[in-house]
Image: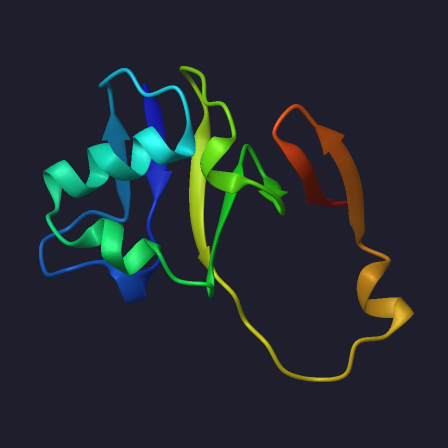
Length: 108
């Protein structure tokens, strides 16, 4: 099973914050399709440049839809927050990693 954590801005009335997905999905793209099957129209909302995905606390920065998933994964859907000035100190808490699905960032 994969657990998907939905932000409040994407939840509809009665929709849980955590959605359990037992259907076999191999990638985030497959997961989005499964979520859209359960909640029609959600895929269109997720197809937005402000939406990011994190898998097991690792933010997927490249080719997120192709990122592989496995039973036990926790996928968080994270709307991008912007503002403020970018400085070296704001980046110190991130660790950039190369993964099989591309680059990922993890909070230290």
